[in-house]
Image (cartoon, rainbow, N blue to C red):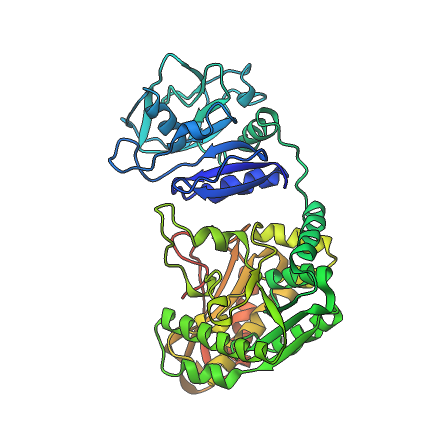
Length: 509
């Protein structure tokens, strides 16, 4: 196993960003809830304590036994993590008397300290906290301050335990990556050797050992995650991998045929199943988003289960689960939280009685793409925008009919085709169209129309955890709007969604 950093999550919205920044240093790391701390093993070279929406002064606030790792490996407390260390060792944490949210500049920096090596005086950092560390014990030394925050960073004397009041993981902290490199590489001593090449080599070897001559069945979607996962398993066991691609009637226009063709060119053993009518029947009359997701999920399981039983001696179910799916299915408060049904991690095998293999469950989306590039997968597949598991089922607001699917497929085809034609497709992270449950008055020729409204959605992002609306050129939007209204019968109005995530989500349902 690679050397790794252990990140303990106290519920911060930024915890995944910490992990992403550490991974960008080619160092492996894992996030675990503060109340489910794994045993400290020799490969764990350091621990980072995340921020939290809680206050260390509140009864029942997240707490940990520092003796589990303090003095054994280096520790870095970030925001709440820093306050917790100080609070537990006699420091004084109080409500902030002034607003401490947003950009600040370091007014003092101890450049002799290993954590702050090459961190500039007056560098910008990002504060986000309601409490502040008013004082620290004599056993602490203050190593950085801002004009309004005396204890912006500290070190416990004679140890490799540190605390910082700001967030190095966000881009607003201009030298955050350098600070994390100082901690992870120089203080913890991690070798920066966790690369996509190393991941592929180790994963294929592990899959060969785990699967042996067993047969694996896997559902493919045409997306990046399931494709990369399938190729990894295929490299390990070849024709013992059986892939199934289900047409749920909610795919993009022509997608079923295109995906089947692309997979066959990759040498995968794949079967296409046309199950459109089964899904339309299951969805008839449903309008609640969660009810639609569950109907789609249940029908998919039924279809996939039926096709799997046509195979003999299958022992494993392959899945393209990635790390954010795993993280989002665990709450720092203990039990699993309710998440969108199409992110249901490991929900299939209870019915199928198969063991699960998830070769990508330690990777973020962009890391999956890097692995795919290492595997030589077609760039057009790796660059494909994320597409939700329920497909157009959650882009049609309200009930779903075959005619609504046809309309949205045509609209989506014009929009996505336009992005490609104008060289914009690779500049956005995800794009699609939503069919709204409203109609509007329009005029075509001399006739009054009363037809459907569609909303176009395009966002820029790194991993989908946060996203900004894509500032597409007005000329392009005008052209696409005109093309949709002229070419898609049943639509007479096009709007563009300019909401960011948060507060909005990328999909509408």
